[in-house]
Length: 340
Image (cartoon, rainbow, N blue to C red):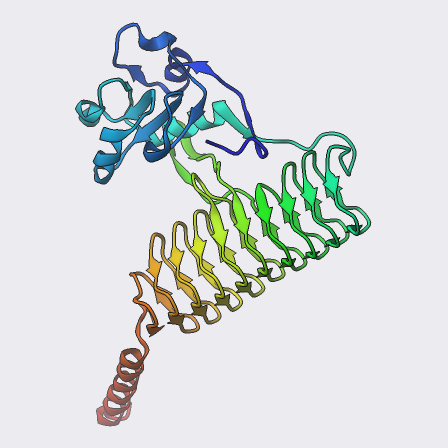
């Protein structure tokens, strides 16, 4: 369920309205009057929500879902459990996205630059041009730099340092967190799907959680989750110009050098380290204490305490041997070729 501090509920709406909106067909006669209040993924659906099914790997989640209704493709209608109303469409993901846009939207800032409904503890320092939304909470002795925007409902702990021109939305921030100039926390992650009239955005209805002692470098981005939360563990340190996508889970005491890119739904164990320009593909698991070399491209899971390099990333010693062999082979080839 989207956090009400950050998202407005625009429902409930009838299944008939959603079917007309998405072009889906309601499978159960007379079920169009049933109403739903929110969207949710299969595993987190409640009896007042609508979900979707597009991947047969999740058939087990579909069988156990508590959702009132489910967007589903024609070939998968028989998999929808009893008590869940099927809305049949050839584009269930797009239908889910359109339903999400109809039922939820991020809260908008209302009132003056610093809302009267914001709660600021003693010792908070605000720079010129700071904007703070309604329901936001800022802990004692936190400093907010000039022109920074704190969105509605955002909570920031004590003794924090937020530099100028930072944007924070849909986020819960712990104590002693440092966010350097130009960083963007909690904007929508990159989620899109093919719709009936072209590519459409998938609503990003999760949050960002920055635990105590985290540092976020200048001009870095941490996207809010699509369904779950994006979480950075205690004392993790992020350099400048780093991208962390939706639903990523970063452990404690991790470090990432500049230009690192972490794709969606990656899980990173405690104490892991990333060199500059390292990249990780989506849904990969990085084991505790792993080290990813500069410019490495990680496409598969990495065991704990492994040291990886190259593209695609492999154990560092193997990569160095292969590079050395390639250099020797190329040098030999050049010696053997006749002069042109």
